[in-house]
Amino acid sequence: MTAKENGMTFPKKPPTRAADAVIATLEVQIMSGALVSDTPLPTERELMKQFNTSRTVIREAIATLSNRGLLESKPRFRPIVRKPDYTAALNAVSGAVGHLLSERGGVKNLYESRVFFERALVREAASAARRDDVRELREALAANAQAIDDSDRFHATDVAFHGVLYRIPRNPIFPAVQKAYIAWLSPHREKMLRSPDRNLVNYKSHERIFLAIEERDPDAAEEALVSHLRAAWEYVRVTLDQEPL
Amino acid sequence: MTAKENGMTFPKKPPTRAADAVIATLEVQIMSGALVSDTPLPTERELMKQFNTSRTVIREAIATLSNRGLLESKPRFRPIVRKPDYTAALNAVSGAVGHLLSERGGVKNLYESRVFFERALVREAASAARRDDVRELREALAANAQAIDDSDRFHATDVAFHGVLYRIPRNPIFPAVQKAYIAWLSPHREKMLRSPDRNLVNYKSHERIFLAIEERDPDAAEEALVSHLRAAWEYVRVTLDQEPL
DNA sequence: TAGTTTGTTTGGTCGTACCATATTGCGTTC
DNA sequence: GAACGCAATATGGTACGACCAAACAAACTA
Image (tube, rainbow over all chains, first blue to last red; front, side, top):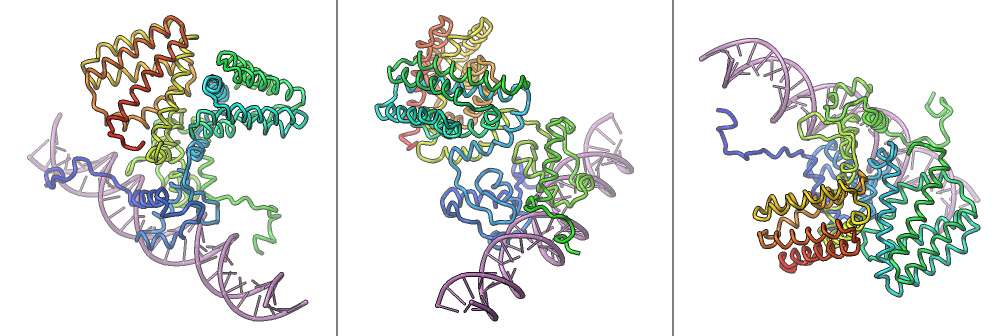
C-alpha cells in the first residue's frame, strides 16, 4: 500500500519546517507587542526550552527574522526586537538593491525613479499643500539659504527641504521612500565635490520650486523640480568621470 | 602563545562571523554569474568541503542568502540560484509589508500610494508615450473590452492594461513596483465580488484614460485615472463592510 | 517497455562540546 | 560605603557527528 492510496492525507503535504513554527510564533509575538520593541530577545537556550526544540532551529529562526528586519542582531549580543515600520521594510531590501545599483544603469534607473516620484510630489504640493505645509517649506528653504556656505549643513537642509515634500501627502509610506532613496543614492552623492557655488545653484532651484508651489502652479513646480534634479544628475555623472552608470 | 600575543591583532577585530565569508563568496559567485541563475546550488556537504567549514556555517549562509533573495529554497530541495532583479528586491519586503497592511490604514496608505504613482504614470504617458506605446495600450484596451463578460479574464486584462502604463517610462523598476502592488493589494481585491456590471464601469474608465493619453492631455488622463481608482477603492471599502482599513 | 522496489543522496533536526566574549557578581581597595 | 578590578558564569558562534524522512537514481521484475 503506497502512501497515495493510504490515508486521504492532504492532497499536498505542507512541507513544514520546524523552524517555520518558531518563526511564525515569534513573528506574531513581535507584531502583537508581546515582545516589546527595542528590548533584547530571550537567550537562545531559553527559547529552545520554550519551543522545545534544538538550538539549530532557534538560530535559524533568529537568522530569518533578523534578515526580515524584525530582529537586529549584532555579532555577539542578544538580538534586539524591532517592530518594523515602512522604513525598516524598505531597508530590508537594501542588500538586494545594492547589487542592482552596481550594474550598468542601475543608479540611473533609481535616480530617474526618484525624479519621477518627486515630480509627482511637487505637483501634489502645488495643488494640495495646506497653509502649514507652505510655511514649513518656507522655513526649510530659509534654513537651506543660511547653509550655503557650509556644504555639510547645506546637504542636511537640502534633504530636509525635499523631506517636506514627501510629508505633504501625509502618507507614511512616502517619507520611508525618501529614506530609501537617501540610503541608496547618497553613496554616489558623496563622491561629488561640494562647493558653495553648487550650493547656491541648488538653493536657487529650491527657491524656484517653492515659489511655484506657493503660487499653486503645478506645471511650473514640476518643471523647476525636473531641471533641478536633472542638473544635479548631470553634475554627478560628469564628476564621476563618465563612469558607466 | 595565545592568539593575542601572537598576531599583531587589529586594534578592532572585525567581528567577522565565519558564515560571513561564505555568504560573501557565494554572493560574488552568484552576481558574477559563476553560479548560473536558475540552477541548483551544490549540495551542502559539497560546500562544506569547498569552504572547509562545518555544515552549520553553510546552512546559515544559505538561510541568509535565501532571505536576501539570492537563493530560493524549498523545503527538501536544493536551493535554486536567483540573480535578483528589481522584482525580487521588492519581493523581499513583502513579509514586513504584510504586517503593516494589517494595521489600521495600512491598506489605504498603500492604495493611495498606488493612486499617486499611477497618476504620475498616466501624465507621463500622455505627454511622452511613443506611437508604439499608444498602440500597445489600444490593444490592451481591446483585450479588456472583450473580457467584460469573463471576470477572471477581465481582471487579467485589467492588470495588463495598467501594466502598459508602468512600462512606458522604460524604467525596469516600475514594472517591479506594479508587481509589488499586485502582490500586496490583490488579496483585498479578491474579496470584492466581481460582476460584468463592475467590469463595464471599469472598462469605461480605462477607455477614458486611453483616450486622454491618445489625445496627449495629461490633466484629463490624470483626472480619469484618479476617478477610476478612487471609485474602485470606494467599491472595495463598501464591499468589505466598513472594515476599518 | 513500464512500473515497482531498493539503495543512495541530501536536506532538516538534534545533541553535545568547545571557544571567545559579555555580563555578572564578588572581593579588594581607597 | 563607593569605585574599581578580577574571576566565575552566561551567552552567542562554531564545529562534529548522528539520525530521519523525502527525493533521487538504479536495479529489478512483470
